[in-house]
Amino acid sequence: MSTTRDRLVAIALDLFERDGFAATPVSHIAARAGVTEMTFFRLCGSKAAAVVEDPFDPVIAAAVAARPPTEAPLARVAAGLRDAWAGQDSSIDASTARRVRIIARSPELSQASWRATEGTRDAIVATLVTGGVPDSSARVATVACLAALHTALLDAVAEDAARPIRGMAGVDAPASVDERLRAALSVLIGDDS
Image 1 (cartoon, rainbow, N blue to C red):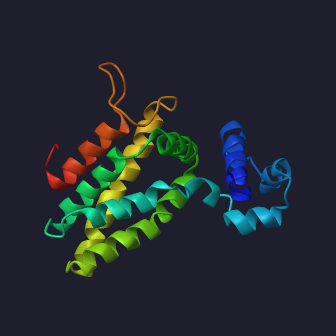
Image 2: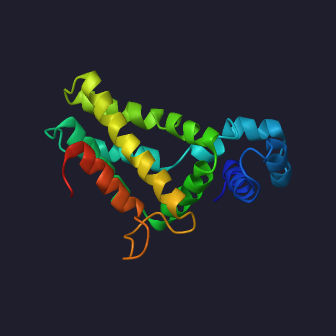
Image 3: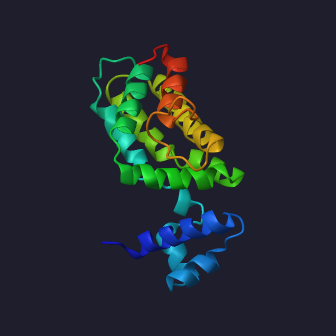
């Protein structure tokens, strides 16, 4: 069942794709949804939040928490991130792809999307610290791996905005996010798995 917030986000994404983020006022989104601007802000928080809040972020934190606490912090976050990414279904993929394409076209949203990972970052850091990892080490490992994911997503979409962001690329196709993420994480942890 779709909520008013879900409807507002869907309309916002449609308009952002069509007209661009900066060129789409909240008044147009609210009018199309048949609500007031105040309702939009109450339910979505901000125009940027309608794009950058992603259902995938809590999944990452849960996947890191599920990893063995004996793994080194950087390896644990990287493996958790890979596990979370591999476990996503096509509906999350379609939503994420759509959001990333909009974010990639807007410098303002690129910065907002990075700030939106703060909750995920804090959850991962808390998981690591609870397992005995020093706070500083937990933050470094977490931020490095989230930066790898952020870069992989934006780079994949920038190279070929029309293709899905998941799956393996063909011989002549641009690298998928899966491949880009694996490569970015291997820079951090020195492993190609």
